[in-house]
Length: 446
Ligand code: PLP
Image 1 (cartoon, rainbow, N blue to C red):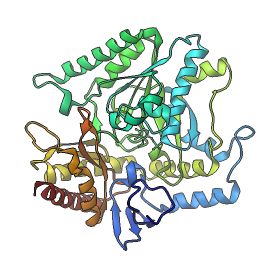
Image 2: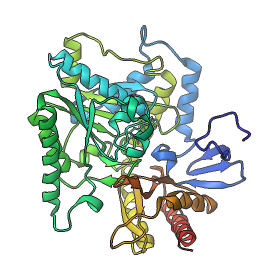
Image 3: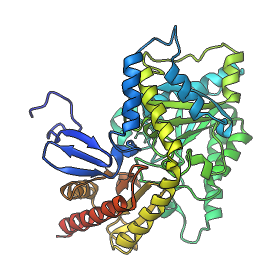
Image 4: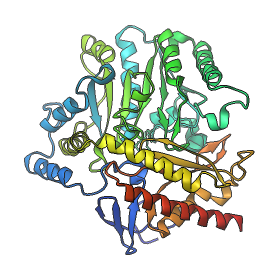
C-alpha cells in the first residue's frame, strides 16, 4: 500500500483521476474513460462545464465563507429561489448542507421536530423500505433497509425505524398477481405496519421514488406512490421522498415525484443539485411543515458549520441555471429514450440479463444466472465488479452494485450519463457496456 489516503479498497490503490472534460475522465493509467455513470449519478453536466467553472471563479473572488449564525449569502438565496420557483408541489423552503446523508439526517430531524411543534411528541417512529439506501451516517443508515450495509452497525442503529417491502415487481409480484393487486398488497402491508406501531406514533414513510444504489433504477408501478401517500394521509404522517440519486432532472422531470402523481412533505436532494462541482445536498420542505416551526419555536433545531456554503451554493446555482436555460430536461428525455432502446437492442435478449429498467438517463441492468428462475449468480463471483473492470478496460465507467436479493448479494450495474450526452455518446456507452457484459459473463461461465 503506498497511499496515506483511506481508499474504498484498502488493499489496492486506484488510479488517479487527473482531468475531466465533458463526458470524459483522463487518468494516471494514461486512459481516457467515458464517465457513463457520473460516479454514482452525480456529474449531471459532465466535467468542467465552462459556465459552472466561471460562476465558481466569480464566487471565489467575492466570498468563500460566512457563518449562517450571522449571515445568509447571495448564492444560497438565489439557489433557493431558483429551486423553489413556482413552489413545486407546495414545497416552499430549502435547507442546504453538504451531502445526501446529511440531508437525510436533516429530513429525519425536521419531520420529528414538526410533530413536536404541533403537540404530537408521541410520534417517534419511521417506516422505510427494505433494500433501500439513504446514506451512511447513523440516522440515514438506520433508515436504510440494506441488510448488508447495516449488518455490523445494527447494535448501534436507532430502533425508531422499521421497514416494509419496496415496490420491486421483477422479484416480488406474484406470478398471477396484477399490477393493481400488487400495489394494493403493498399498501396493505404499509397500513398493517402503521397499525402495529400505532398510527399515532408514526412520523413518516420514507422511500426513494426510483431506487438507486441498492437495486439499480427500480421504478415503482403506477399508482404505488399515490397508494402509499393515502396511507400516510389517513394517519396524519408525513411522506419523505429521497431523491438524492433520482432527483434534479435525472429521470427527465426536475423531480421524480412529478411522474408519480404525489407530492412529498419533505424531499431530500443532493447529487444532481451540484453535479459534483461542490459537495452539496439539501431538503425541500412544504409550507405545512415549515410554518409549524416558524409559528412554534421559530428555529429548526439542527444545523452545520457548512450549511448553505457560498461556494457550494454558487456551483449548484450555476448547474441549475444550465439545466433550465439549456433545456436539458428535454435532452434527458430524448437521450433516455435512446439509451433504453439501445440497451434493450444490445442486451434485451441476453440469457443472463434479467431486467433492463430505469427512467430518463437513469438505467440499470439486473444480471441473473437463470432467466427463468431469476436466480442470482453466486455472490462469490462478484459479477457486478467484473463488469465494472471489463468496462474500464474498454474505456467506460459504470456503477456496479451488489444489491440484496432475499438477503443475498445480487448483481446490478447502473448507467447515468450526463444530461448533455449526445446520441453518439449514448451509442459509445452502450457499445462499450455491451462488450464489457459479454466479457465478464464469459469469465464467470468458463
Ligand atoms: N440517498 C440516496 C438515495 C443515495 O443514493 C445516496 C448516495 O448514494 C444517499 C442518500 C447518501 O448520499 P451521500 O453519499 O452524498 O451521503
